[in-house]
Image (cartoon, rainbow, N blue to C red; front, side, top):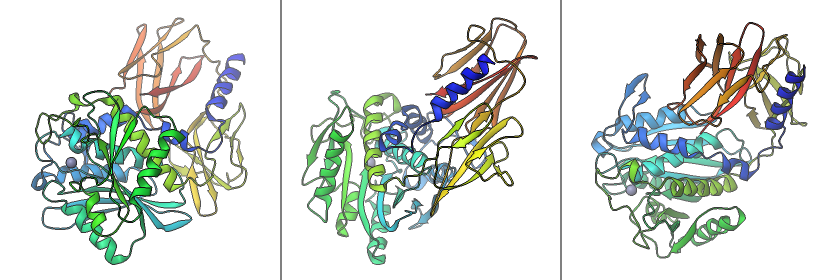
Length: 451
Ligand SMILES: [Zn+2]
């Protein structure tokens, strides 16, 4: 009983938080997640596209449909997005994902990057920008926002900013109320390691105010970065096509102004190994700060608390529907703030407040009659994990280990007759996982963080 109580206590600490703050959201930007996307997009590693294992060998404009398919499939994996595969000529395809604002759907902020390249690899130019847009989409799509965010990945930047030009022209014709366009192009190189980056701006619409808003974030939150505002900034990337239509826009990226851009520019030597990962990660977090501030979080608390007998939503004013994470189906009649599961399992709650619907993360509820392992008996190391985690028990060498993702999906099941089980985590995305370790008379569930 003592051990069960300590387990419940730990889970409660993990989950008993208020609705997420901007800082919480910024902290969710993971460097491993960014790097995995860069490596997949540049063909350093394979990725699953349309159900098969593929290597994206090139993203030149006449040869980058696989990269577009990859981007679409990634965005389709996120909630609350409407995705458009926008063909604008015989070879050009923009990918546009829209997350509609709950309060002001007509007030639009765009985060964008071009995904085409001039050679093989081209990690810095501009897989870094694409990875950042996808990382921000992964995180923000879980949140209700007051304003609309458009995640845009442009094609044919390298042959004349064609994709962005098409989109900006259409938007102006439609009278779209675009309040800010944040274009990111090359954001992973910092040769002199001074953490300086550029904000390129021109006095068009509210672009100068947008640059000021961005600089203010450097003091509102903590970043290991120093900005240089370049005015008049370069027109040599997609944001300038929005300037041409009179829209507010800036470019954020590594410091061309200080001549500290990648020496491998526009060549197949521009590879992941040449990036400064901490600089890239810091800039991605900074860009997230701008997007979450402008999107503006709707104050819904999608966290939950787990006790020995029930799970409760920490939100107090909404309506509730509990789900079984393993089937992803709603549980009939389970619509109270507090849910008492009839059986052990993995559960989440849908909280509805006005027009806003958010899901909690999945939590494991376990009141099996089995005792838990005590801390001296069970070793899970390392946690957080990067490549491989090892599970061992001092009391027995006959045990079973189940690895679940945060949705409760069983990823791996290993039984062992030796002293320890090693589980490879290298190819799994960053985030929260659960390890459930069973013997005949004991069972424990451990929250495992993959970085
Ligand atoms: Zn570029």
